[in-house]
Image 1: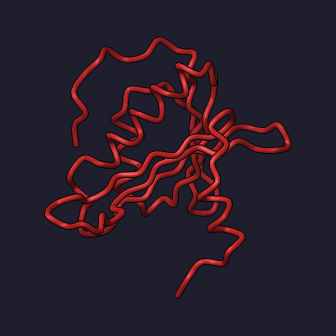
Image 2 (image 1 turned 45 degrees about the vertical axis):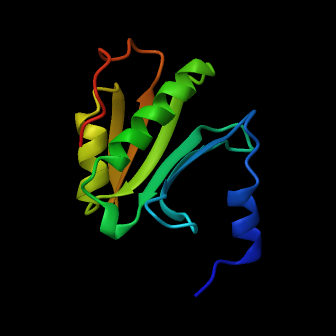
Length: 134
């Protein structure tokens, strides 16, 4: 199955003055680099909070890419003066929930109908610099 053109276009055309996207490619001995992970935040055109999300291909999960993408996106958001990011995560998405819970980034969360909403406070003092861990 393929994605509708409108969604693909929105994902591919990033306005880096408002949004951010980071990709991770597998470049191992292959002239055709494969996309293995994507992290991004997208601003709300109505002026609401920017929404953070990331995906890691199944066969690359558990390698620390989700943690890396999350921390890098948070660092860039802080550099750009963004004060808050939001993320909606299914409650059974253990991997993403663990990354958020262990990140040290100050957040509030609420749960409704199997979806946990995180509101990250980027104005708070960032945790001590550390290696990106799994």
